[in-house]
Length: 114
Image (cartoon, rainbow, N blue to C red; front, top):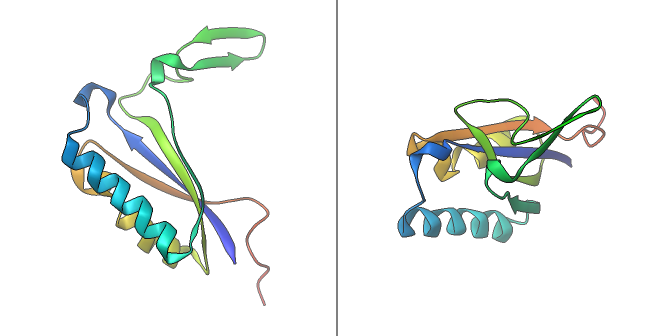
């Protein structure tokens, strides 16, 4: 089975998550675990804690200045991209209007075409 990374984006200027949003996110993660698809998942610290490297230059903050930042990610196993998109589509970040998700195959995990 192939692995897919689901990158979860957020608008850091939108403020803290509500208790309801946190509960909804936790439930979504638990649903993926219960389905057997979850490989790993991580929330990331605030973007201002990032340190970026460009050649020999080290700077504080995220790599690029953008409205949305990666807030977390998970890696799931799914038979194909359509199944991975179905899991990603249920992520609450898709509905909240303050971010979204991106789905990418994990290199080297895609089964060869038959």
